[in-house]
Length: 203
Image 1: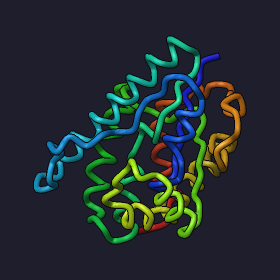
Image 2 (image 1 turned 45 degrees about the vertical axis):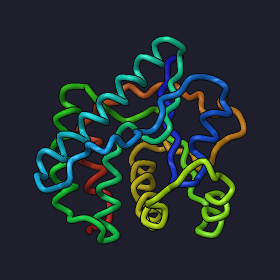
Image 3 (image 1 turned 60 degrees about the vertical axis):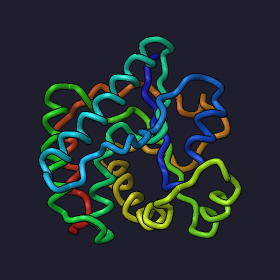
């Protein structure tokens, strides 16, 4: 069986800790380089992040082919991030619209897609603060902003779960075998992508 599993949640939710606890290789979350676009050119910015998504998706496919299962620390299809930013007023909705267009092109080229399983954990605000304090190795400079994205993040994956029941599992299981689900054939389904956007609350 080959399957791609995504581990999602706000900053300090325990994504990396869970991935490490599996004892095997996993696709690490994106690490900032300091060379990210500043947003002055929204098309350039959208293209950059779509390419980042595609690179992480390629890593997931390689790991899946090698071991049968790829675990990803955060979703390679990170389109939800710009939508969540717009939902809380931290970025213009046009940023999301440009990124959606870039991601849709990547879907058509089969360079990025939907994971087979999403493990989603969204602890309450106080629990996130406690978990952040328990991990002094991470600076989490944008913690407050990322914590504010928890509600729209839940809305994003709630919409996906309604459209593709069983794809999103709540909480992080104690064993990776819980995530072993049959692979989904329509990873690059642009119709599902469009329906997901339609299903989301207006921003």
